Amino acid sequence: MKVLLINGSPNEHGCTDLALREVAGALEANGISTEMLWIGKGAVRGCIACGGCKGKGRCVFGDDAVNKAIEQMQQADGLVVGSPVYYASANGSVVALLDRMFYASGGFPGKPAAAVVSARRAGTTASLDELNKYFTICGMPVVSSGYWNMVHGNSPAEAAQDAEGLQIMRNLGRNMAWLLHCIEAGKKAGVNFPEQETGNRTNFIR
Image (cartoon, rainbow, N blue to C red; front, side, top):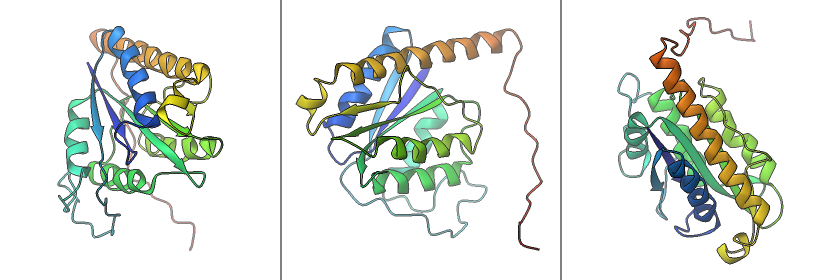
């Protein structure tokens, strides 16, 4: 089993990476392999609602990390998305990536997911709420820890001193590994992800 970790920070080895690697270490210690995807410093275009991805499972624009993320996630069993906090929100680049990644793919039902954020001080809970909505709209079980999934610090050196934050990351990794093992055991026992009803789309303006 494998978990994809997406580093949504423009800094490849910043505070977000530090947090994600703590999660990855706990996953690997519990028998789950990991793969890290850094979205980079380049522009990530927003969704233009062209509909060109319909039925293709990939975005029509191939000049950034979106289609690579879709391909990697299709091969993964779980997902962790990390982002720094900008103005009490996740980084705009990772939001643009997730908009297109989830819309083009249809999401990844049944695959556990978690969000991780880093901040100097505040805006973390709003950013977690923003990121978790991608998972809850498409039937992905959201993995939690013993506290909200955040680390604090203005630099990796400062974040490394956040003993509670790093503990939260390790517990998150352990909890995701446990859930993945439970899902695997359930499949072997004939318990699969439930069939989803579709077709009812209600507009609120008549």
